[in-house]
Image: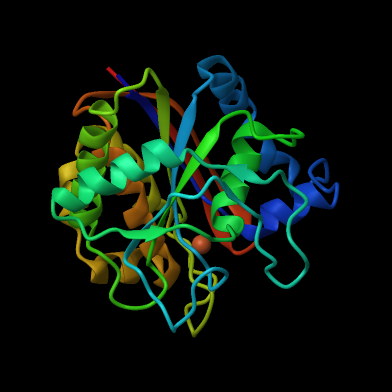
Length: 279
Ligand SMILES: [Fe+2]
């Protein structure tokens, strides 16, 4: 039986990828950011997951305003890094797990989640930056990755509650997959940030800290939070944090916080990161 053993949440700031790719990780500005992931890299190297289910959003790389799937699951054999305007990131091609991905798609769709099935898709910084933060710069990613893209770019994104319940459906799907696989689920994006308008640069440490606390203690309270509260408190791009709730919904009710990191600034966002293990 396949099993989800832990969840990882992390920001997916594109500038972090650029800093790594351009050899700037040791510079004074970036050094504290990467330091916050050193323990995480050791942790995941010990965990050795077979598969990572990576919940992220596409930033107009694979999709555009022509097609806006609310939930899209990558069922392909592999996924190339997307060209986001500066050429594709020099990171390994992402190897998928089509059997498990199709199984999750089938299980979730029969559980009445209308997943879009994706058989070809470039993956952008939303997916590759979390892999870089957790696995560093290997020649090949050490595990299979199932991309799960959530629309948080064009209104209306799904509710936090819908995301939380999708996480539960994913857990049920994984646990009914007939292969021994160790799975870790990533929720990415956030934390508080706003990229445009009069409030550009908004950071709300108090909100972010409470969100991190409640991920462990009271995720149901987070699942009830309306979109307006994200926008008001965490800025327009803070809505990405609903994706963390997919991760949380896929874990046990009781989890243990293994590691937490919070740092401002990285580019114009608050970087947040947490690792939760199932109790
Ligand atoms: Fe993003």
